[in-house]
Image (cartoon, rainbow, N blue to C red; front, side):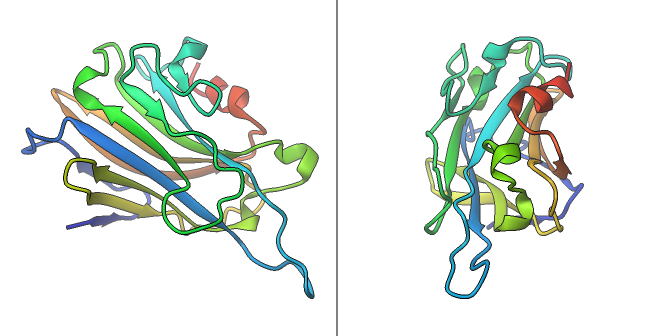
Length: 193
């Protein structure tokens, strides 16, 4: 049974679920539609990424998993690859996380979506609809958590969608849903330095 979260809500992800050692994090979005008479919306290239934090800090570019670095240095986080348009149903980009093998020094995984080359292309999240982040048990295919990003993100170019973080010996999920005007991954990573 899926638990639908609202912005700011937190939930235990692994407590009482000893068999949940791997998760699939799916991120999805759709183009907002037509922009004028007989014209379709421009392609907006959104990119999902994971920032791996040590003591809530980003310290090494190898701790960033995205289309250009598909695997964390320890192999616990893996990115499916780049979707250039967001067209079609279902998840646009998928990130697999092996929770039991995330090294102990990492206390938080931050999931972000940014618009590639947003400044030059003059694009923002007002051109996107139906954005979400979800967590799925890949063994059973059961959707555990879904957070629909339904706020008005016009003018925003990066979304901090959610976080998976350690609390004692368990993993929890936080629905963040914060938009920023950071033009790229370097700038969003700088927020955690």
